Image 1 (tube, helix red, strand yellow):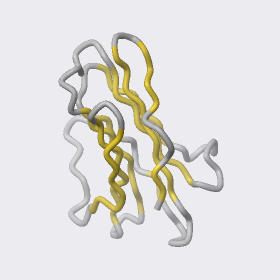
Image 2 (spheres, helix red, strand yellow):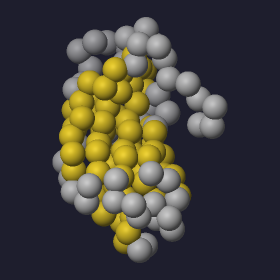
Image 3 (spheres, rainbow, N blue to C red):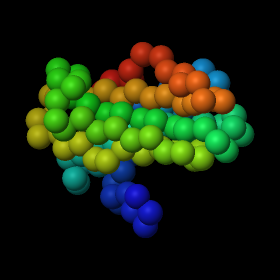
Image 4 (cartoon, one colour):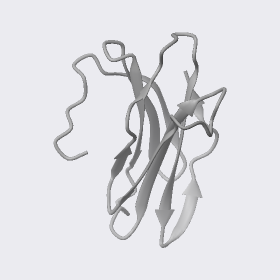
Length: 112
């Protein structure tokens, strides 16, 4: 995602603070009719660890349009966009971080 610039109208539509000083968010662009998930860690432990984020349609969490990412040695991870063809389609995001090689899920998904 190096060099990627978010759409001009990108808005955080869901944001929750999670365990271990992390933030789980869904960002949405009405112009693109698309959303992406972002997980950010604020624990100063990114070196040697990972940050993971996923976004998917609530009705089909394992469908082919699900977007997942895992970033090593990073403070934040952003998924690729998922297009929402119908405004009634609920989107959900979840995330995880690793600490000393142990994956820690960040709780229940956030949905919009």
